[in-house]
Amino acid sequence: MIDELDRKILEILQSDARIPNSEIAKQIGIVPSATAERIKKLVQRGIIAGYDLRLNAKSVELGLVAFIFVKADEPVNDCSTALELAKIPEVLEIHNIAGEDCYLLKARVRDAESLGRFLREKVGTIPTVKNTRTVIALETFKENGPLPLDEAMKGKLYD
Image 1 (tube, rainbow, N blue to C red):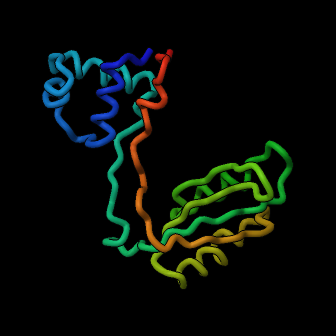
Image 2: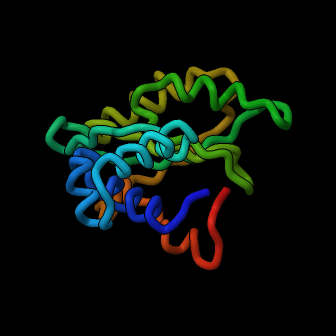
């Protein structure tokens, strides 16, 4: 079960995963050893899935964000196309979606020319990919935000 202290710990770690246990303990009003034990249990239970490093995409010349709708020719409940798409490094996210298309991808590439090559040489070579539609982000205002734990916990605690 996630209680109010766990929620506070998770919110703090989402904003700064490198914050020392002693600082978390100070912010939530418990001793550092109890904080460390709670974090350990959150990891063991799979609530904390990992600690990621976020790079400034523009500084490593991956400034173009594209969202690609993919229509695949595959049987219902067959996710082989998604598994192939997941092997492509430029693909950051893959979502199985409702509607006309099968998948929505989020990809990062250097520029429009790189996007064209990515679509032709990587996505387009997967045999089950039938069609794609691409939308390019002109500007990103929020990305990789924290999960809204306050909203998720309104009126209930989790097992």
